[in-house]
Length: 321
Image (cartoon, rainbow, N blue to C red; front, side, top):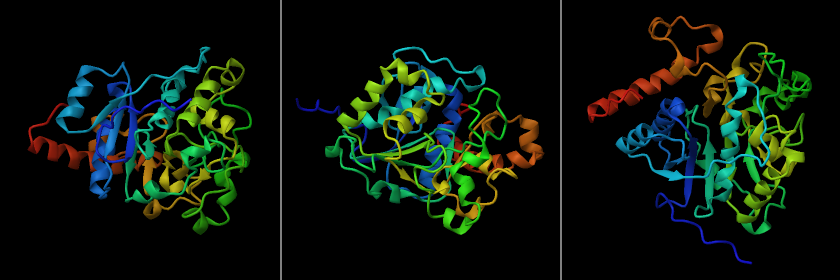
């Protein structure tokens, strides 16, 4: 049986950044992500992957800024997996697995819409990974950074083994210089990748393995963190662990979490994990700069966003996003 013919590409390039968008709540983040890729001089386009739920106002915003877009299916497991109301984002996160299906591209680097690129990281487009012909059976199926499993907000519904002692980043505290360029081995700690950044060689066979797992209630009912739980289950330790700098999770910078390895000037891509997002800050807080120590890097996002919005107003785009 031959693989189905892939649909047309949304852009000419065979290597792309992608980001999932299902509603307008994350649209300010997506627009700033797109601008940040331009500002660091990336030579590769960003394609917005939208689902049926993405509204007309969102499409108009993307079109006004010339951001390419492509429809993808909204993925869910065959049996409903219920998440805590504070983690409702995980319902959408299954769909972050769709880049594995985009075989019209040779390389896809999936980015969360609440990320912002600070330094050029085009080298990810050439990172050695398994060829699609290996059908997801090799040792380098995809690349990602580790998930931080410290649970710094002490969410009571998180698994009891989500503690600093089981976090891959904790193992790097004694050698922070190495942590800037090398990830802990993929089997370290709880051995779970963070789904915010995924470097993928799309493959029909690999995607079929993902869909097979989604159809198995015995697997998905135990997947507390949707896409990243699935990836660590289906491809255990068979992925490339990148250094934190490619997916620098905002809580890692907090005192007592992983500030032992965090270096502001080494971060290539910051991930504004957890709520509130920078764009949800009150105007009074934003204007006064009266942020708590934990949220001071939100000012980074606003600096890029204000530059973006000024440029957009200069060409007549002023839609509030």
